[in-house]
Length: 76
Image (cartoon, rainbow, N blue to C red):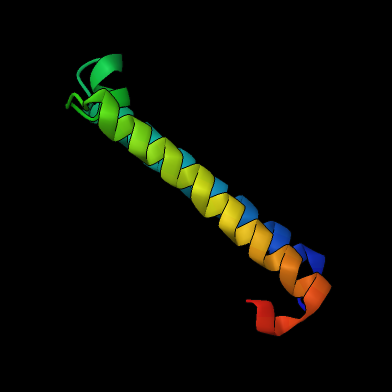
């Protein structure tokens, strides 16, 4: 098992990298709208499917893990 400081340092490094990517992307974006949307407009149905996939993916992952803890590894 890794020590806590290794996990914390990797988490901080990931957060710093994401912050750096955001700063660089913001500098190249012409406006706040193009930064948020990436310069494109997406239809509502696509946004709906993306939100639905996030919900279903999370429920499936957590549910499978919970069942594996209760029943055993074969549930996964």
